[in-house]
Image (tube, rainbow, N blue to C red):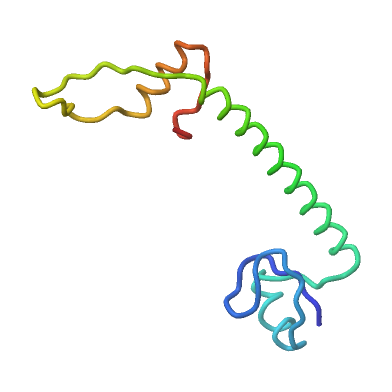
Length: 114
């Protein structure tokens, strides 16, 4: 029996893999537990379309990240902070401070990605 995995299963495969299993294992455990679906032609077409869309989304995000990295490589930030005599600063520079300084320069960056 061929099935499409909906999640990673140890010693069997990863999510969206098409694997062959014994009929009883697929019919009595994997499918009722919601861990797999039968690999019919329509399910395979849906899987192929989902994988194509996911690859397109990843490529778009990668190109956006590369464009942002190019912009950030041209920028130099200076953030003022209190420091001891030896040059060590008290506390740390947070991602919020970095995001605010980048916003002043016209670069909008999500603080979670810093």
